[in-house]
Structure formats: structure tokens, C-alpha cells
Amino acid sequence: MEIAIMLYDGITSLDAIGPYEVFAATQKCKVKFVAKKKGLIKLDSKMGCLHADYSFSEVTSADILVVPGCSPPNYKNPMNDEETLNWIRQIHETTKWTTSVCTGSLILSAAGLLNGAPATSHWGSFDLLQSLGAIPTDERVVRHGKIVTAAGVSSGIDMALQLVAWELGEDMGKGVQLILEYDPQPPFDTGSTKKAPASLVEPIRGMLQEFSKREPNI
Amino acid sequence: MEIAIMLYDGITSLDAIGPYEVFAATQKCKVKFVAKKKGLIKLDSKMGCLHADYSFSEVTSADILVVPGCSPPNYKNPMNDEETLNWIRQIHETTKWTTSVCTGSLILSAAGLLNGAPATSHWGSFDLLQSLGAIPTDERVVRHGKIVTAAGVSSGIDMALQLVAWELGEDMGKGVQLILEYDPQPPFDTGSTKKAPASLVEPIRGMLQEFSKREPNI
Image (cartoon, rainbow over all chains, first blue to last red):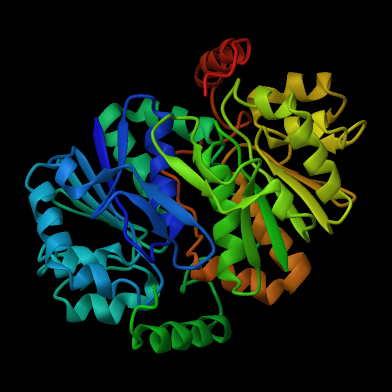
């Protein structure tokens, strides 16, 4: 099974590496990190890099496409880049599954793939997702036909396990979960806006909205 | 707060990127990816790279040291490399917390930091951990003085959230969990050997033990 994970400057590393690790652990997937130009890719934190081993021109199809997200406002660059959007549309024509993690769904929206479709994103980007024509849906993994969107950052792990189970069988999904020892024990219960108190949610929402008005800084 | 994440060829990407993403989200940490030589670092899957922005000689102290793990048998190279072990010992002298994810604890053991200490690792490496002098402890995050070891691969996220809460306060820990939308919903309940059936655990244990007898292949 061929997996293309799209990279771009300003990306959130875990959005890409969570799914990568799940697919890699199957030992049945060829995972390709793909970007407009191959080479180093700057992270949104400005504290490190990922690496694209393939350029868009070298990857013309995939069984699964993963479009990771980033902190606001770095999604604006890929959302406004026709070469990137055209590559996504081209790969989407060939996929069994076209997927996103976090604000990657904004980029899928910009490519025209989520018009009128239920989809999720980082919880702080639901207004923007709606303004782009999707129907924001507050679930961790949302499937609409062959498009699967995942919520913020860490949710790509859950999404990829589900995709592995759908494509390679439940036993493989269960085995990968054991290999990655994915038995989460977060120290708090504040991982979603339904569970965290408003006093925690609202300042972070405000900060993210403020950031989203800016120009990309990477 | 300065965080040094040690990289080496053959590493498991999520072991490093899980903690990185947690520390980065605080916006209060300077995270440095450090290796013997800076540049591209090959992943254990042979399907991608991370990137070391710093060499050992450029990083002589850290508040938190993170030693990620890898699939067997790739830990053998760092475990047998005196320059790597000496760097770990040197940084450990300066840290508030010296930590590992997954089989990274084997490398800490090889550096002599876990003699007689309770510690964890990937569940498939408990025998090896014990043979190196540590006391294998089947918990997701094990603290012994200033040394904190985490279980397999994905557990580095839980460990880093705990470290953030200890160092920067519970509110910061809770906020980071919300920013990363870490509200895990794995599709199965097979993430640990306590939960997965023996019919799933034993073949994977056998495979990992077989791999561990080989020579590093990266």
C-alpha cells in the first residue's frame, strides 16, 4: 500500500509523524514524504525540520494521501498555492482514501474537496472550516465517502489505526496498536473542548484566532 | 527551558516527535535535535529522515534530555558507541530530568544510569533491560529520582505532558493537552500486554526477540 504524506514549510510535525509511524509499523506500507520541492521542511515551531524525500512531480498517485496541518496562520501558504492544490486534486483522483489531520482539512477545503461535506479540523479552526464550505463535525475522526478528516494534532494516530484496520484488517490494526504501545494515559482529561473547562478553552481559542489573522511567518 | 532530544540513525520517529510536539506547544521551551553529527538521520523504517540541527559538541547541557528508542536491533549502535554514551553522561550531569522513550532506556542503561533503578521500556525489551541492570517496571511512565523512562513509542507524549506539568505547572500541562487535542480514542483496546490477548502478544514478542538477535541494519 502506498501512502503519500504531504509536507510544507510551517507544518506541525506530529500531524505527519503520528500517521507515518502507524503505517510504518504495519511493514506493509511504502510511506513517502512528499513536498513541492524535496529537501528540508521547516516546522511551525521554528525549532527543527522534517525532510521531503520526494517532490510533487515524482509522486503521481497514492492509495492513501495524508495532508497534515499546522499552527495558524501557516496553512495560508499551501491554501493559496495552485501547484499544491492541483497536486492534491491529482492524487485524490487516484486514492482509496484522501485524509487530513488537524488544519490539513482547511487545505483539502481550499482544493475544493470538502464542499458540503461533514469534516473535522483542529477545534480552533471550525469557523474557518465552515467558511470554506465544509460542515464542521465535532468528532475525532470523520469519514465522508473516501475522505477522512481527523481533529487536532494527536488525532492522526487514531485515524491511521482506523485506516489500517479498514485496509489491512482488524488484526493488523490491533497488532500495530500493541507494537506502538498505544495505551494512552494522559495526565489530565482536558484533551477536547467538551472536557476542558471554559476557563482553559477560551484563552487558547482567542490566541489561535488572533494568530489566524496574521500572515504566515515561515 | 532547554530540551535536548538525542537522534541517531535507526531511530523511531514518534519516540522523538511525540515529546518534541508537547514541549514545542508550551512556547516556553527551546527544543534542540542533537546527534553525533548534524544532518539527516535515517529512520528505522528506512522510509524517511529526521534532522539533527546540532552536533554533540554544540550542546553541553540541557534542562531535559530525551533519549528516544528504535526498533530492535538498531539500539546496538548507540549502546556500543562510547562517544554517544559519554555525551549522555555529560548532559545527565547538567539536567533536571534525564528521560527516555521506548528502548531509549536500553541506551540509558548502557550509559550506566539505570543500575538497580526501576525503569520501563518497550514491553518487548524487558528481558534486555533487566540484563543491563535496571528493574523492569510495567508502568507507562516510571520516575526514579530525576530519571524518567516511558514505555513503548507513543508513551513519550504522556511522559512529556507530565514533565511539562511538573516544570511549568498543571495549567500549562492541561493547556498543551487541549492544544494538541490529545483526547485519545484508539479504535481498539490492545495497546498494552495487559489488555491484548496472548494470541496477539506472543507472535509479536517472538518477532521482536528474533529481530533483537540481529546486527543493526541502518
